[in-house]
Length: 455
Image (cartoon, rainbow, N blue to C red; front, top):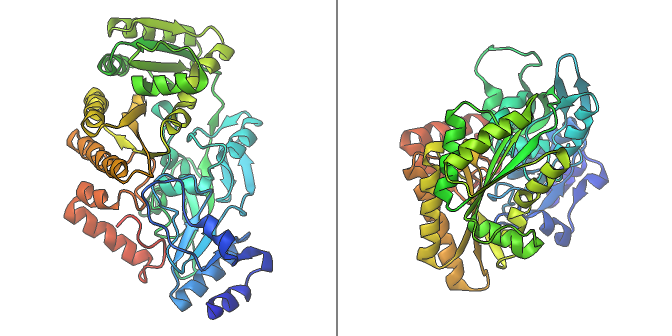
């Protein structure tokens, strides 16, 4: 410990090091349940690339593990500390270095908050589309680490589609640049995409070149109520099959609706078993909403309510934004799953999740990015009750198994971390897992970067 601190201090300012155990303990974990976390030896908050390089050279010399962190809003334990590690928090590297309206790019450090970037580019008539639910808190570096998505990904895609290039500090302290600033480029292997979603296990992202888009028109929203989740999923299939491109297509099941009502008194009909929200930011959103409204009615919607203006649209979206908070109020703890299935299997996923909830005697609400099949079943349980905690974990695993059976994936946007590492092996298979471990060995031969995650 003394050697570690002495060598770190040799290349870092005093305020970049935190050793107080009471403070370092607050950096030990992200927001995931059921994920073990160790006690870090030290927390480092660098402000420059050179300081990150110094940390990694020191870690390599002393064989000390390093756990990179952003805002710790993750839901898989990917940012959890291991005993005796260096926690490398990148939140102080928070500068927007460049915004180019001509090239439609932004160049940022990893600690930039997603919402901060979005507002900055909006001032120049541009947008950065990826919008995770935690966008007011989460960092761009964390978004890159988990390949995060958001509400608008049905039309605009996820983080991976907006990362053009990266500066990465490797495990031994070398600095590598990947990708490009240009609209096109196919020189060599696509190492940029390799790092997106790698959860800090291959290198430390210290700069990112991000693609931007022109700001879209303000969207209008439609809300459709359904007597069953299957009917709502049928409407989703009809909407996508007819070629519509909504900017948002979100679904809440009856359990989630009742939780939102209980918390916010929004007056949603208690008999509604599914609420579908569709939005368009097209030149004529009212016409698109009318067409989608007809499809919802044909699928069995009991009521279809199109918004007339932006303010009314925001009111309709409020229920969806409150979903996770409302479900968290049901019991003392929640486990938020992140299973993505083909759109055509969405109804089977929701019906299967309801059956799992009944089997284990638990409240499990589902909110979903329905337009891309990404479901978020939220298992509500009392963490002080050992039996209920056991049932929660078992139901969580059954939900992931169901997703794989339906041709899906164990994570659409939250990542693997600690929570799903056993399931990653099942999804990849032995050959895929061997290849992935080989990549890890190439970039991190000593196994110092975020050990215990993914594999």
